[in-house]
Amino acid sequence: MKTALITGVSSGFGLESLKALIELDYKVIAIARRKERLEKLQELYGNKIYPIALDVRDKQAVFTAIKNLPQEFKNISLLINNAGLALGLDEFDSLNIEDIEAMVDTNIKGFLYIARATLPLLRKTKNAHVINLGSIAANVPYYGGNVYCGTKAFVAQFSKALRTDLRGSNIKVTNIAPGLCKTEFSEVRFKGDVKKADEVYENTKYIKAEDIAKIITFIISLPEHININEIELMPVTQTWAGTFSEKI
Image (cartoon, rainbow, N blue to C red; front, side, top):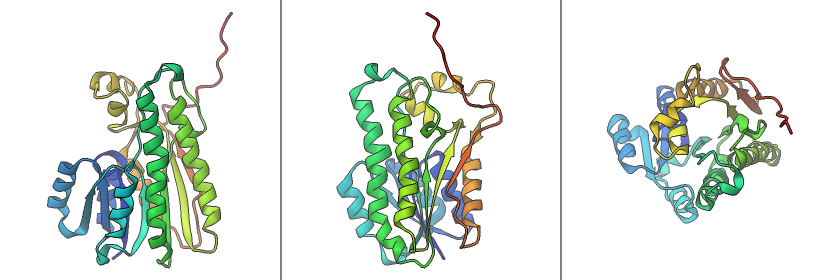
């Protein structure tokens, strides 16, 4: 039985990926901040998961948790580095400094802590895979995206650089860069304002978390000699915004 580690499993991409991998007979190390949701997952899946309640921004907690994994969960062959968030849609100089720090600390620093703590275990596995959750925001800037776009550009470039570092190790690295997806993402961005979050998806046919989970199961089903470097996807109802010229 293979073992995966997934961050951000309490909702969205992380939760649906966990469900899909358990269907594929994986054991899952399930990391999330919300302990109560992890407890519900443990009730559902029993010893198929090993829940860890922590915030990926907490460097010491991340490294301690990975170091202290039970022996039966240390043979990790798949890392899904998913935890991340966007906060606000303000122009950069109006953006709350705490929100700026939260995005950088989660999407970059927390992302790196998980990767750094887990890679030594992945190297011990004959064939392993790192899947990073990026965004089209890495390549397509949008109004109010400023810091979030920058953090996802980091994820995209780091994914390429990491794969270069790992040459010869037989560890694959894939960056998945989705467009418009409906999860708790917008609710978090608008700090619990569900009405405002729902307006983002009005009159669209958006990508669902289950769709991303299907893409992940496809990627990991490929032959060992094939690496998908990056997948960028949008719903059919979404395209690039194009350029903007202000009239003066």
